[in-house]
Length: 213
Image (tube, rainbow, N blue to C red; front, side, top):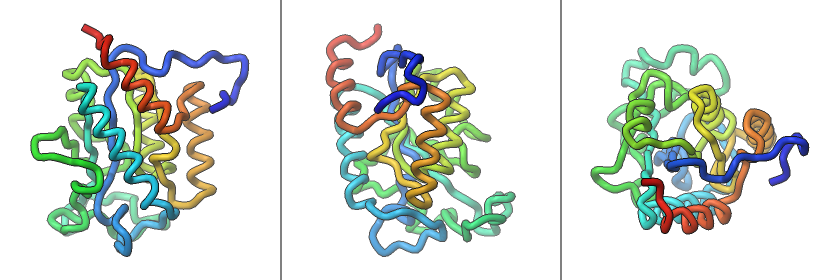
């Protein structure tokens, strides 16, 4: 991906220790025919297998994988302002379609799971504590929506001084236009942030034999 500002040099693809963040790979967002209450662009049948390949590669290279799950109480008390825009009620606690799409993304019992009530995976969660424990420096983001939960998680990670990468063929937005705009906004914050899954796979393979002690 060409940098927005050609005078800026991107950081190395992986700085220090990486972690893969799988944001909201839930049944109501990614399974065909699901009714998630959220507008979304098509193409999940292509993006989800690519994201799964990153999970498998990360496991093989002993790179931590963190699954993030948006979940709301049945009485809607924690939605806040989320329903003021285009989104309808979604991700209700205890419903089958709110679960991580385990088979599709290789989510396993015992994996790191961070539930969240708001868009950013950092807001009101223990993600920061977990990442500090993992000694993560570079966060690689997949999932949805590109323009909402991925973008806001990226911004908070950036403000917490993490190096951030967004895998643009493993994220999807509420629309193509919103998806494209969010990718540009993230690249604006960190030159070289945008990448493709093929680059991530290559970086994981290169990282494996020389893991940071």
